[in-house]
Length: 129
Image (cartoon, rainbow, N blue to C red):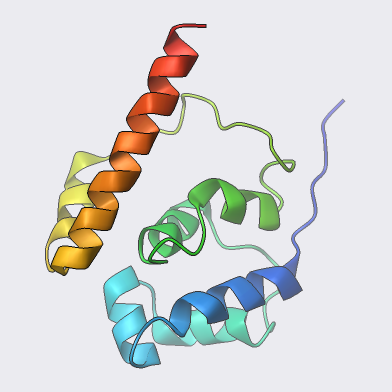
C-alpha cells in the first residue's frame, strides 16, 4: 500500500520567506537559488497547491544559510514522512555543487565545510552499522 504525504503549503511558504529574509532582496535570493523570482513569490504567497520538485527543494536548502535542510523541505512538501531518511537514489551532482560554490562568501564557504564534515560523519555511521 502506498503512503500518501501532504504538501504543507503554509509551512513551506513560511520557510521560503525565512530563507528570503536572509538576502537583501528577492532578486538576490532568486539569483543565488537559481529559481525564478515569480515562482518563489507564488510559493511565499501560498498561490500554488502543488509542491515544487525535489530539485527546487535542493536549491532552496543550498541557499538557506543553514535555516533548513533538503530533508526538512522534502518532509514539508510531502515527499517524505517526518524523520524518514532519504535513500541512496539521491545522487550528488558535482557540477551543480561547483556552480553553487562559485561566489560564496568566506562565511558561507566555512559553513558549507562544517556541514560537509557533519554529513561525512553521518555517512560513516550508516556504513558502519
